Length: 391
Figure 1 (spheres, helix red, strand yellow):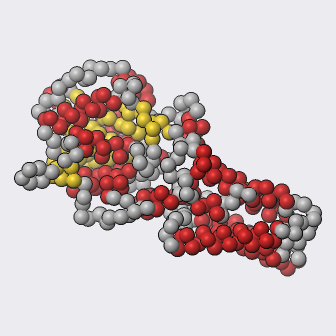
Figure 2 (figure 1 turned 180 degrees about the vertical axis):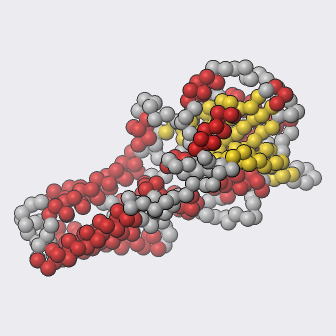
Figure 3 (figure 1 turned 60 degrees about the vertical axis):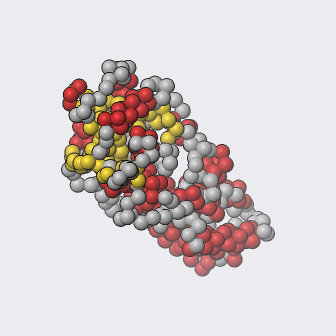
């Protein structure tokens, strides 16, 4: 949903106030632009933007709320803290279209059925927001992004006389369910987002909240209605296919999560079987397993307790990525084991059972690629709870 390639154009057009006080002509058009998914993770959901075209005054620009810069000061620190700052950029539409032509991504345009007053309202609102003091906003991938901005701006321009309530789209879906439909289940992006996102993504949502995804912006605008005194009009007057490319799809990779995690599960299963046969314990396996598990748990706790990520709290992945394991890992290296450690591992087995119950009850949905990880640690914890041998 985001693009970073046009910061140069953003800088140029931010300084250019030629159109700041202009009045649009009768020939002006407001277009909702939807682009297909790209290869990078931040492009996987596609992209949404607003185009304003007025041939009478030689205007054809894109308003793009998806600009970010990896090189901005403290970008990664801000990202970890949930402070992701994005920019609204205005630049020539031809540059926008050329970028997607280069990436071979489809682009569609929905020309809105707007009055002259509403055209001007769109234009004035967007022009005001391109000013330096207004262009930056606090981004959230689910609640405040390039797609939701289009929904909100349209409501403002039409003074909330818009009905986004199509009969063809099921109601009360969760944001996680919708996200999982967009991202291939066996991808690192799907695994990572499901890992760091808590139960807020599992709540049933109104249809308008689906519009954090460009596909649903396109679908809801297509069936949207303008509420009137006598009859409701279609929100979209015309749809144009500007670029017609086949949509990118995920290809199988031996480095995909399910392959990597399944291989690790088989290795741990085989090692545990050998340990049981020889009445031994592989201390290096236990240390690495617990240390990485605990480190991951501390990361998830940090996101929950100390970051501003809206989706991070109430994340029950911390039940299997268990932060105390970071310290327990060092105890497994001791020659004389602590007598209480088998009971600790029994407790970890109980937590894994709780994860399964939360999943079954749909309180939190976990990534499918979690299954081999959960099986891996379940087998090892169960073994250590019954056969914790001294070194």
